[in-house]
Image 1 (cartoon, rainbow, N blue to C red):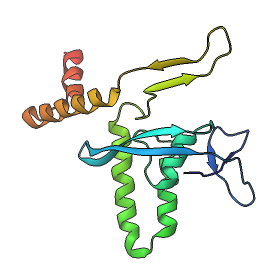
Image 2 (image 1 turned 180 degrees about the vertical axis):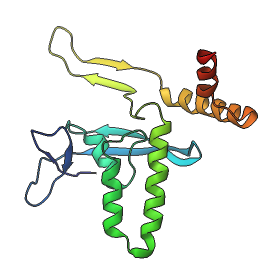
Image 3 (image 1 turned 180 degrees about the horizontal axis):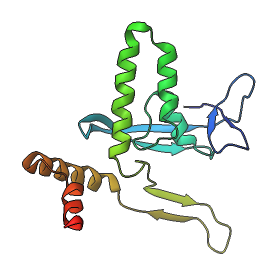
Length: 169
């Protein structure tokens, strides 16, 4: 996908280019890896390959497509502003409901679900290209949340509530 991004030097947020502020070209390749659920909501795991290096490029491209990154409270509202413009009065309730569910998902997530699995840095001699890889943290995030959900179903109390009680006593 190629969508131009622009911004204001006084604001850290970027925005999608417009006729009055066209911005610079930004290109990202997106591949769907897996579909599943997190906290009972449908989510999609994607691999993103930025072809350009604009600030917040990946976050903006996904938000503009209507798929904000879980835990990204900065750009999630862009997705819903776009949906509200496209919806009619009958659909407004559905958009509000979806916004509330995504906001809750962002609250429940203890981090933004954006992570670099690989970095490739072209360096000048004598080092040459440097590459770094790491494990996918979202596999453990999903299993940890699943264990927490199972604990809540069993006891009616979350791990956080249990720890809070221990500290208070």
